[in-house]
Image 1 (tube, helix red, strand yellow):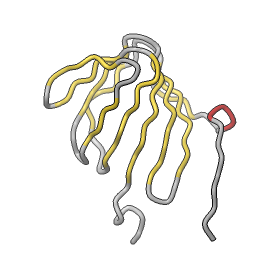
Image 2: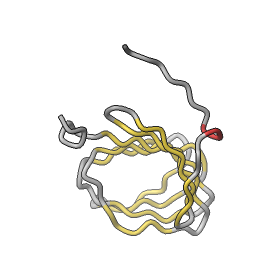
Image 3: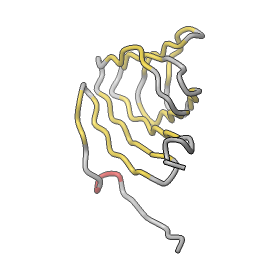
Image 4: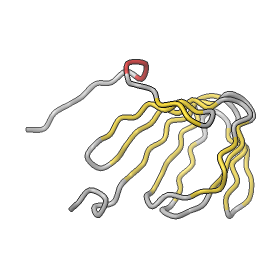
Length: 109
């Protein structure tokens, strides 16, 4: 039977590592994360095997991709194709919402 779930970020458990605090909601075909990142944190070059969106809610970061470097500020949205590399330096404390879309092979279909 289809269901509806309601979440509040501060009620979810937080995982902290490498200058970032993450809270995650996992769905059937996607995950949603709130990521709070401290100023001065660097995310080295990496990629994912899935499509990803980043929604910038607060702060300032410098994002580097194959297209060059751009400053990310509140209101901006970034979409990465699977395997698109990226790196970031967080200039100010930053809050992001990260959406990770999984392909059917990752879901065991």
